Image (cartoon, rainbow, N blue to C red; front, side):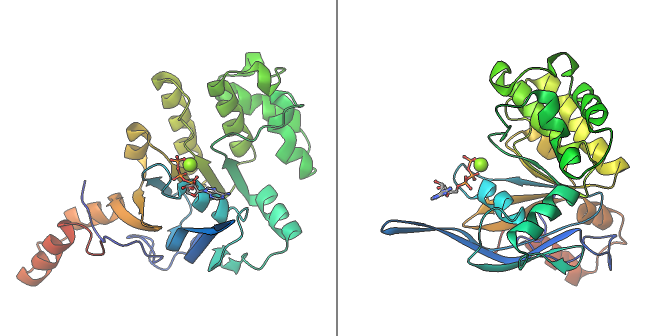
Length: 274
Ligand SMILES: Nc1ncnc2c1ncn2[C@@H]1O[C@H](COP(=O)(O)OP(=O)(O)OP(=O)(O)O)[C@@H](O)[C@H]1O
Ligand SMILES: [Mg+2]
């Protein structure tokens, strides 16, 4: 895998020049304030996600990955920065507008699932469609539960499910309405290899067939291998680690001149901003 463009930017990936990102974030900054302490976790994050594109974020524990996901979902108030959804700035949305935006366009898999304890698996999964006033919510929930291999647990409450089963309910809930954007925090973190593989296929199938943009936080190298573009979160910013689209376009390009070869080698030598 190549290591191109050490710093993240919000420009179009190769082959999508001129395409409008589904989600674009610019210079996101986030500080947690505790009594006498301030902890800056996002120090100027730029990212763009396109239709049908999968983006992975890896990085050490505590580096701010979940905080970024929460910020992108409008669930963590930012110090500064802007987020655009399909070219509309959502950073200025009211809480109600934000909630409607999430309901209509976003599926979120939280690191700790956030299932509603007094609802069964089926009720948890059907909730986004019910809230949106859409019909056939239970039928759609049953189908999503079948896709994650949990038909036989649909009447169980979260406390009656294993960690991996709860995780799969959360995934079913996030994808059942085929949202434009899925934000998933370690979606295979609690799963055995075989079940993880099923979930990976499901997510990438959704990405391809429904042109969903996927934002995946993961420590799972098997999952990370599948993404179109991979970032590492370090020092509160995202660094590009792997960009398959850029890599394949370079492989297919005409032989470089001396000048561009030098530039490419410099890029391949790794991050210049550390
Ligand atoms: N609400 C909060 N108040 C104060 N500090 C917080 C809060 N939430 C997270 N943090 C701190 O911010 C840092 C980033 O946390 P975050 O959960 O984003 O990390 P992460 O990269 O997702 O880690 P992991 O891989 O362990 O899930 C951590 O040091 C954490 O302790
Ligand atoms: Mg986390």
